[in-house]
Length: 211
Image (cartoon, rainbow, N blue to C red; front, side, top):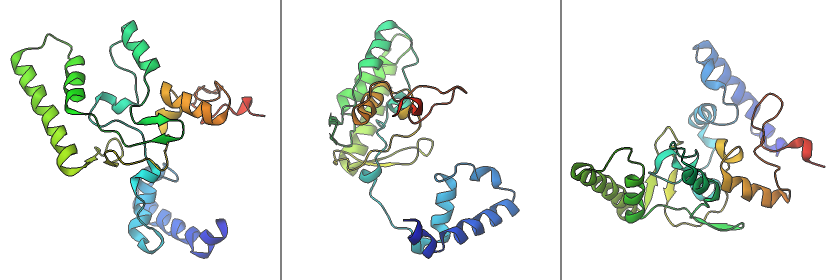
């Protein structure tokens, strides 16, 4: 609550961080208000008010290893590829109330890697793809978890674990078809999510349609 935040001195902590970063001419990295670098810096400076939270409580439903991690449509624009993107459902989504952290199998990885090749597959290509798929399989099977690249958010994905909370960030609430359908379900209003406003910005929801 706001009262507890004030009691912990949260406002003073944020003000102190802003002063230090602005004086060091690092103000541009503080533009992501409420997430990203500012929260990371605050957690380093004030460990006593932060606590670890398992990723399953704030799971960002990307799929590791596949191109675009499932948050953008395929780059090839055939009609069949577009239809598959539109109809695709996240393989870890059991129903609108249940999901698990999904990591592709070896066969899925190999098939996917072969499917995105833009030129005829040679024996050398196939051996390289086998190696890539096997490295990912080892990461999943031996470790039991996958560390995402920092460009995606550095999320630790514990394969097969139940998702306790899902965080729909960025593309998920603007143009990923399966998440828009899920958000529509929970909003009980079809077409509520994913539409641009007058300035062509992607809103979390169509506020003009809400009663």
